[in-house]
Length: 278
Image (cartoon, rainbow, N blue to C red; front, side, top):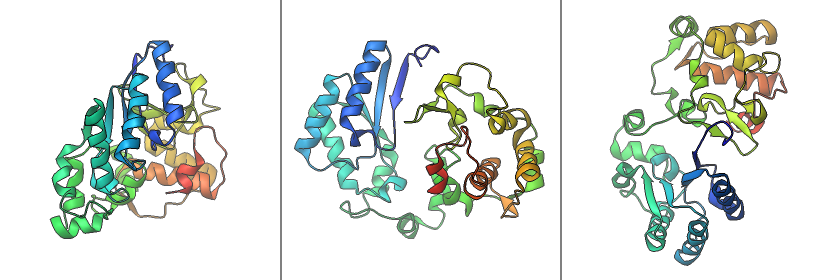
């Protein structure tokens, strides 16, 4: 990243603080390389007590961590009691770590429920109305991938295949965006923040070889229509749905088919666990 001109990063997950010794090493290495770590993200699942949380945060602060982005949303509350989140917030205050509450707007909603237990999205809909989930993207930036595709499919406008192809006839230029980019823990660059797509770190910063990256280069040059045509012609892909909410949902359906049903071993469809667990 330093070689390619990046001077600041953030560390996300997964849950980075489950591996404190590795975060310490990353912070130390970043400092040596002259790269600023703007913040570390956490979902607070690791919290067990005020004392142990303060001890951990002090270790990280001593190695250069100045800010902690604390995830606060109904999606996290499905799995993590709000009491853990509040515990981490209090530990940050006690140790002088800057808090980035992502996002504080949800605190009032979450506080409606028992903070000692996680709560499903259905519970939120029961309290705040049937349209609660549909309204969430207006309050919270959500990447159109992964679990979000399933969560929002039922509340999103659907489009036929022909509509999606005609509306997205150009290539997927989002793949080249670098204002906000991610590397995963395996050393893969994730183009366009599209989880499940991967470019090996040694291939970043130079033109991609279509022989090694046939799917990503097709998406870039021909868009979802070209990717769909290639999947149908070469791998007998047949859409399971008559309609999709977006080109991203269709793209993921194709990629999941290639990995799980055709057992395609590809450096660009990684990690395989992403597809196996969705």
